[in-house]
Image (cartoon, rainbow, N blue to C red; front, top):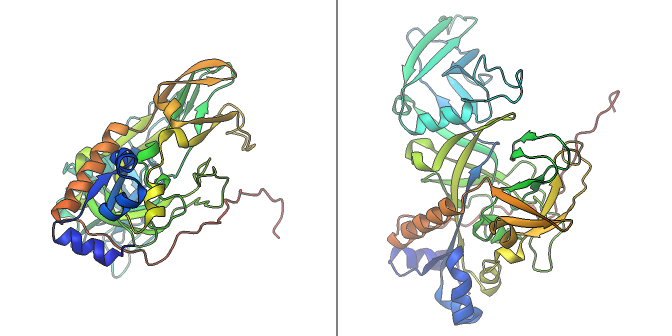
Length: 396
């Protein structure tokens, strides 16, 4: 019905009709699928929540004399230096040097890689300490200095796994409190936690990856970035509802963008007691209305999306693959679900409010002509399965 080129022409001329994934459902109910597909050009989707597989490449430039960093820390958080002389990679879940971790369980994990990334984007002054073994071309063996993001040549966010298509609802069947990356889980099914924007979430609005693929332009914490690969643990070949919605984790995206263009309110360091540190990110992805089927997918409602309920006291930790059952996101967002006939209160690690804010900000950028769509250069795998790590006593 439409092409990327036609939609971008309408965006540039200020004529594009753009709605959020939160708005499109009622619009289609009112107008009908065929009429709405002709009128609407773009649907904006979004999510905001913790995404552990995130990090960034930083380039410091060369000191006088030069140094080839073999070990380095930013704000006492170790960065990876096994690349070029003054390039480093900072991971969101890296702990600060000297953090007692879970020595006195549950640990507090007050500061780590995610917090450094937040402070960088906020423009704060940070400390770099680096060591080297010294070479003829890089003679300096130690350096300590202070910098801001504006001093760096590059600060590039490179995230191996963001935007899980769907995810677990975590619950605890044991008699002990659990401290997990899904938050604190009280004993005997007293609470449950989930983490998804549901009907606003990007890949739930494009379940078969018809428009989101390698090369898709995305809104990453306020900066324009793109999908550079399928994400790690991407497993599109999963069980789905009759409407095509995955009933488990399924797809993921690998994303990148320039951190110097990011907005601090959409990037936050996160501490999980008893587990560690992470990074909460805001991500928005536009979906072009190329045809009626793509539009129909974006009309998915929370009640149509099923998430697996998993016991984190045994089945998750032991990787049994068992689930207690499935609940939909309408039930989850109500704040209460039923498990074995028992009412269980529910909390969310993601923010629907922030996701909706992002979807509207992205929609406004598109309407102004400041954000054009990019046609994918390669599709995401639709039939990939996730493999386990096999423990072997000897080489194959």
